Length: 373
Ligand SMILES: Cc1cc2nc3c(=O)[nH]c(=O)nc-3n(C[C@H](O)[C@H](O)[C@H](O)COP(=O)(O)OP(=O)(O)OC[C@H]3O[C@@H](n4cnc5c(N)ncnc54)[C@H](O)[C@@H]3O)c2cc1C
Image (cartoon, rainbow, N blue to C red; front, side, top):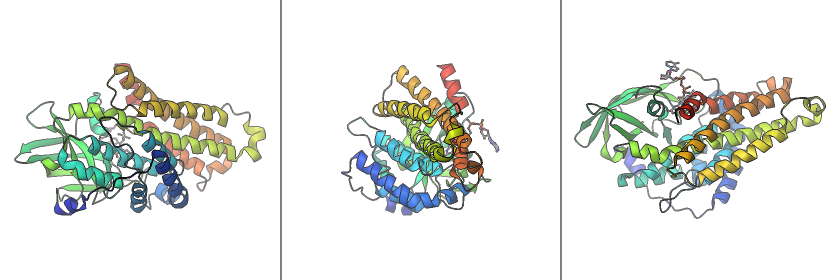
């Protein structure tokens, strides 16, 4: 770890706030400070680092910290939903940050305790490069990073095509395959300030453009033992995988809530004809309530090792992507021409919704996973 990074890993101030108080504070910041930035984030002219730190200050990135071997992700998901009601791109960055915290909280490496505190408080920002590993575990593609054991750590090379919520002073968790040990994998924290790491700006995206997303190249990067999240990574991945997926529900819940709000907003002027559309806000409200209830139940038990639990988590994630796209599609049909204006958020919601369905695990991967189970 470089000295600059080490000096940032200060001691955490323990928060006494309840999950509800945190969600309320996060929702207030989202309405007041995020709403005016949402379209600039969407178009990619703003990456909201300061706002992510403010959310961290309010406790948004720490409520899912495990306690005595148990964890409840409900508060983190509710906070992300409050952010997602305003801006889907920022809800995705919130997921990146919460997932980084989830890795650090669960790491058996004692050297990462203060790092976990800093991520939870928003003093350190970052994300996760687990799309490629997650796809590799289910036979979809090969691991893109390789590591060679050396004294005091590993030397890593390779490239990941997209990692979000990054900047020069950020970190992210990812996985490499160990050279000369077929099948052996190690999960580690990449320090973006390392001179061997290059952040390559991506071509403009359809949405999610202000999310600090880069292609990341590793050119013989020395990863010291203090940055190892888990070696071997296999059992660790099994431990964190349900949390990784469940936290994504926050993006879907926030987006669907706003799509319902959009449909209701036009009801006064267009209700007389919109009532002929097959899907109405009440239908989505019912689906949303059931999605929320099931998410909160599963979120109370993220370390459950039952096969049935895992299958239910995968099914819920699939439902969340499908429901996001359906709600955004319906919001467009209810809005008509006004939703087609670039200045209206209905079209932004549609573009954001597709991301919920394509971010790893994408719809097609989830369907493959269920078929394999
Ligand atoms: C805006 C954005 C942000 C993302 N942020 C993250 C992140 O933070 N962390 C993370 O791990 N993943 C991230 N991803 C990746 C994402 O999670 C999915 O993996 C990705 O959307 C593709 O998933 P898929 O299963 O549909 O795979 P597919 O798109 O079907 O296949 C992916 C494979 O195709 C290759 N490929 C796809 N497009 C291109 C291209 N233009 N040029 C060359 N090769 C290509 C890739 O190398 C990869 O091996 C991000 C993607 C986007 C669009």
